[in-house]
Length: 298
Image (cartoon, rainbow, N blue to C red; front, side):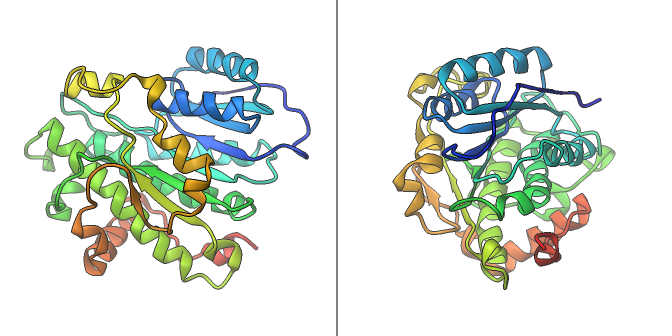
């Protein structure tokens, strides 16, 4: 069951920008939200632990956020992702300027999503695909709108067969935590590259002007890094790559579809055939299409 908790909100006129950050109750997501709050922006923040959400609201208001809404959802369930988008619409926001698809998982042991897919792939790739599409009407009303989806320097060089990525239940034959994570981070890069092309082709300038960006957030001592690689990174309080891409002139000047900060992007992100194949598979397995974007923003 998805539950919603929110702070009282002042009028939205006069605020600088509105940011939506998934996975904001700890780690890089929380650090980024804290920096955005200190700048006085309006925030919609997501997590999957209501108690942590209440603490986050208080923290961000104390730091100076123009307003804060917290929404709770398990991104391992596509029905809850859909509900998350619906609850966002019910907040009565006039726009979303920047969507930050930050939430991600690294699972040492195999788990499956509510729909039966590998949990890492479902949360890290399928959920952002659906949430981004559902929020496009609000993003299209944003000021210099931007969609940021977190990739990683640990991205795979190339994706395996799509039937392996989208296997369900007993169809999943083997599991490697690191391979699953790396594939999902390449999936995020390829999603961003294709999304940039899809939106740029739209006739409505409110859609074609949306920036789509991705990045390596840095090697940061988050819970995820500690679980998979050990304490080999920088402190979370120094993890500013996401903020830099979301809220500084650096991000404004970045070409749509581009990857930033960590290593080189996989050649798959420039292969139109592979991008199209992954996109079609995402549409098939999520039941979500971007073919009606123009209609959605009318």
